[in-house]
Image (cartoon, rainbow, N blue to C red):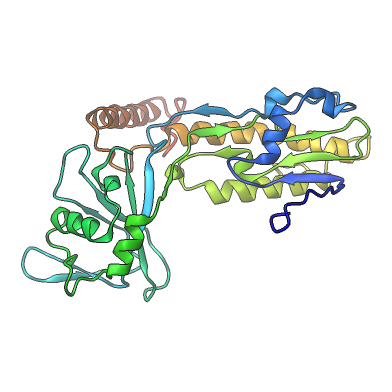
Length: 312
């Protein structure tokens, strides 16, 4: 209990681990001695140790700066472009060196009167992470974006927001990882454990499938527990009636290939969209782009025998 510090014991037929990338439920399954699961003959703790791959987007740092709604972007002719919430914007800094280049990325949102968050995504060695007070950060942005109204007096961002941004720790993109173990049940079929969401899989947001894949896990588990095919949702044609044990086994068997394919897609889909500025990143981007073009040509020349690059 977080308020009293007391330990309590609860019994359940099914424990669902939906507790994130650093899941304690999954960790328990991966580190617990097999003797603790006596009567669970299929239990293999190694299956719950996540397999990890480092993509070009992994371990980048990110935090958010709040911009006002419908803010203006001055142009070179003395005019001003008034932004709209439903449009996507990428505002590049005047700096171009690996540790100073920055791109402000603004994703679309429905409410045109709401505060407009901009994502700051950089390598961990970027200069912006060395500042921890609002005024220093504001001065850096003022030099990096001389056209933008980031000045102290009359600027479009308040001192409080600059200070909040400077003190925010932000977070880091994870590696591409997934757990081969997704569900386990005792031999009698009286109780079991299932994982969903980031407890199974985690990856950088390159392909925009984080929330979608988590919801897909829930749908697949729900179908499995109702005795349905986790992919099609149709009834299972079998002489034996579905049981709690067979349902969890079906979730494990049918859903694992889906997750393995998802992680492979996340590794190669679009990992360079953040304009990583290191020289090796720029070289890898060119190689990645050449691969996309080459696979597209092969796809056309072979009339679809060679599949296109996964992002297409």
